[in-house]
Image (cartoon, rainbow, N blue to C red; front, side, top):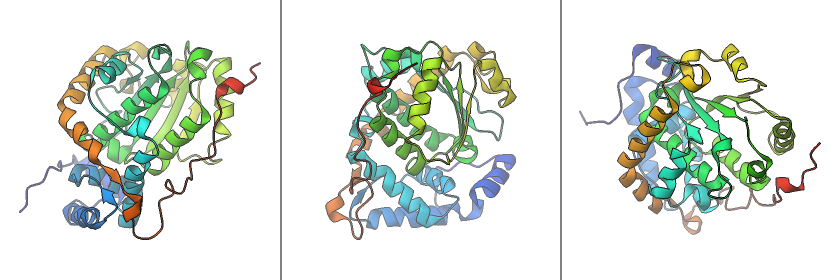
Length: 312
């Protein structure tokens, strides 16, 4: 029997994988091998054939091979359109400094043994004079890919994103232009191998509500995840157990500093993996059939900035 890097699932998680993702444990390797063959035989596509990554894509697509191929192709096609976030993913001092600011924190444990993983974002930690939203997005999408590789809870049960709007200033907000947000949403919705099941915004200010109302005009009327806005962080616990959140938020899931240290080490351990990543992408001149949506400019035509907003 061929060796595999795939992990054996806990019985509860295996049951959830079957009900949520149509995953049959005995058929995984055969289906993954089929996707690997497709990757190597696609002339336009230069992409890794890591079985853990392919499994995450299969789970995201409920084990539909055609849907998996489309999403996988999208993920690597978008790199040429979104290089400021998906390109040059070196683990350097700039990336580690971004992590250290605590803009994005992924607590150490999932919500439960078969529950989703949580991401906490505190955009007040962005210093407009030292960084920009593209660097923050680059970091979080690297973290998401590593989660897809290493965390079965994330690829089966999904992600819960908690966005803390406390003390976010207008100077920080105006950096998030609609074009950047549209591309980031397309990446989440149509490309990455993980799914967001819930997004919670807490400690929302009046200015933040104005920005939020503006942003939602550019999103589909029906979002693929539950989206809840809370005035207070305490209201979050009507939806999540306290065990899911960090001690700083009244939870029991470790301190932010512990999570940052854990991810710093994970990034350092993944340095070679991410360095190899620079070679991957698509060559649209070699694509057989229709050009990708990204090559056709589907994301073009949106520009502008929140600086044009009139705030009450």
